[in-house]
Length: 99
Image 1: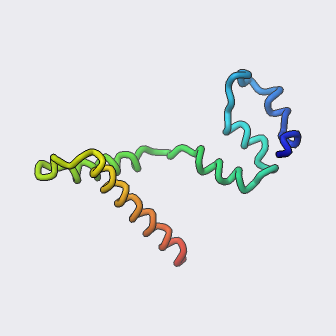
Image 2: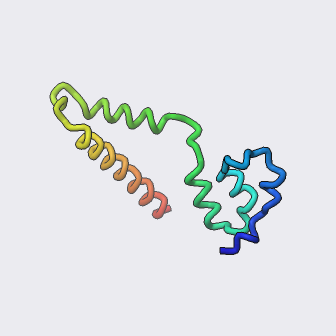
Image 3: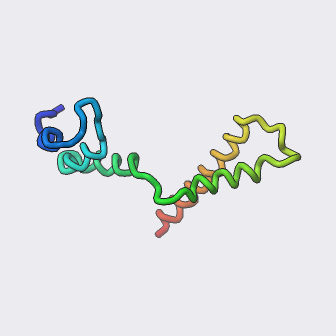
């Protein structure tokens, strides 16, 4: 796979332990070699700046689990939350495509 092309100097001069692997450091050093994969890695390894998304999900769960719906199984609640998130994701993508 052409591993000889990787930027080995990023690891030899690094303060990382031999046993520790840091994918962020790897992609910082080697993003020019695989630019498309680097973009994907950036999305995968990025951390949200706030916890607003998580708080929104908990709020949604609180609205789903009410006294009248207290017998819903955890799997059903997860399915409802997933469906809601999926619909929001699709709406966001449709709006982006239209622009």
